[in-house]
Amino acid sequence: MQHSVDSLVRLLESYRGRDKVIRTFCYGSQLIGGILSRKEEADASSHNLGKSLLLFSAQLSHCRTVLRLFDDISMLAYSHSYGFGSQEKDGIVRWISVLTNMADQFYYPCEHVAWAADAHLVRVKSERWWLFGTVLWGTSLLLGILRSIRILMLLKQKLRKCDKDASSRHQIHKRIQVELLCIFGCLTDLSNAIHWMPRGFLWAGQFPPWLVGLMGTVSSLVGLIKLQVDCDQTCAAE
Image (cartoon, rainbow, N blue to C red; front, side, top):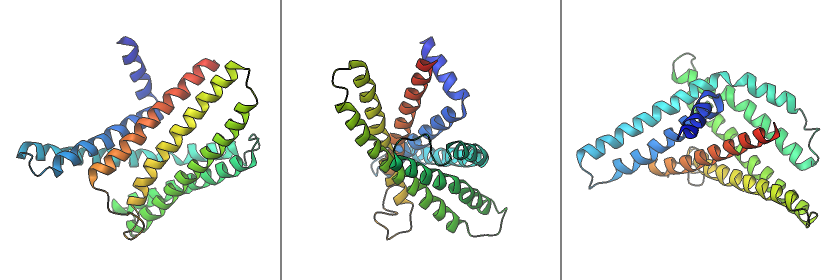
């Protein structure tokens, strides 16, 4: 019990961990709220609870948007440190990663302008900037899927070359599982990104709130699992 509490405290003390916890609660509230508010046979109290959860979800989403106002510098530092990916052995992975960093870097200013427009801080139409941000987010997710697919191909090639090394095979299998999780998480987020595109584009605007919440909750849980795996690997390296 104490170990679980300590792990939760460490998670909440880090920016990435806190963001992922808020994200999970945000989409989880939208999932439950969407289900409760859509039930025609539900009583008034359940319906009101559903509406309250949807409002709570919207506030958490706004909280994350405000916190991301300060992410530009850290993203720029990461993009600068990665550069053109000279440390990557595979050229395809390198250039996909570079394009992903570019999409992520341009995403933040677009979201900031959209937020400022909604807050009446600047006199521009926020819809256009939200759309730019959604396109960049979707592009980043699609590139992330392609990157993971390429890494999976490389890992399978590597797996065939170490038939007798049990330790190496175990590590490769763990990396394969992580990349599969990444693909699954990106696909669920991409489904939501398409939903927030203008109507007429694939299934844009057709998801009910509970389905948006479901997709987001799944991707958030995948993010928490991946974060825990990254922490375990860091602790093992130390």
